[in-house]
Image 1 (cartoon, rainbow, N blue to C red):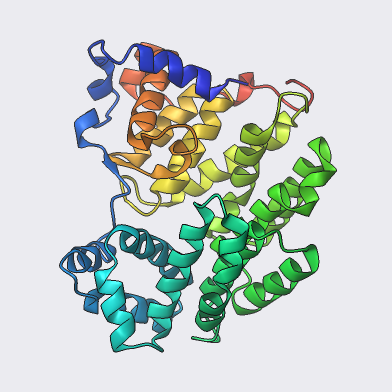
Image 2 (cartoon, rainbow, N blue to C red; image 1 turned 90 degrees about the vertical axis):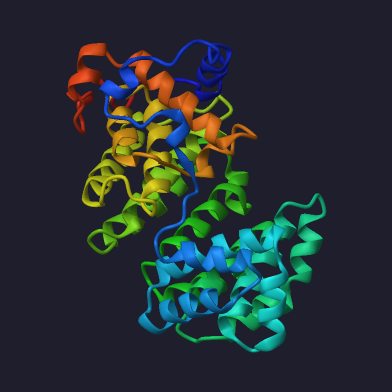
Length: 354
């Protein structure tokens, strides 16, 4: 399996050369038209208003997601609003002052506090200090699973024991059995928490077992179907080279995510993170034509994750990956759009071929 870091280093060294003429022929937008972390049509106006110091549109947006139980959108919007508040906090400060018990303001504040603590060298200590904020968010709306996703992230970073994590997980799934964010948080705990001490194949099997069970139980079209893709990403990025990975499980995770991606609208902002993550995994597996299909579906949208795990310039990382895909897909197929889901399945390695 390819090392993406090595591929991108090689691509970066060649970035001063003119872009490949196959870019337009393959139906891909030029580099200067690709947008990083573009908001959707609902989030965009809230961010614009927040830039003016106004919290009203953000409050209305989150209140609407809570009223309609749009927990996946709510989670995504909270993360983006908290990220904005990291550098421009006046609107959130005003919101909390005007409505100190507003469950939506409390939720953004809790996400911001936990995210900031994660970035600090004193992470565990600072995460412990976020307890009151997270607990206030949990009390905001008894139906809402998003505070429990934040609590799961906090517990993972503060080295909570397995019993505490199980308690939080039970609270999360009681509110929303198929909430994507909570499942990702639990999977990350399995990969970095006490289970990780099992080491090697044992911890990776634990991740895949959990992810595959959740995907099988997921509702049609649910992002939880892509949870095995996250398990594949964890295995590919955390493996120290001494553990033999199960290629069949990696490919099957990519196949499931590819099928899910095909059900979502092309060139839309909200499926972009799934497609960017899938592109990374497909490149790592050497499935170049399948990766080309995903960058076509992504269109002009890229996301910081997963490229920010390897570069301080996630947009540049995505563009470099795109160029590498072009170099590895035969020119005729690239230009005619012959890449199809599963186009390389006949030639790919299966379990036991590593």
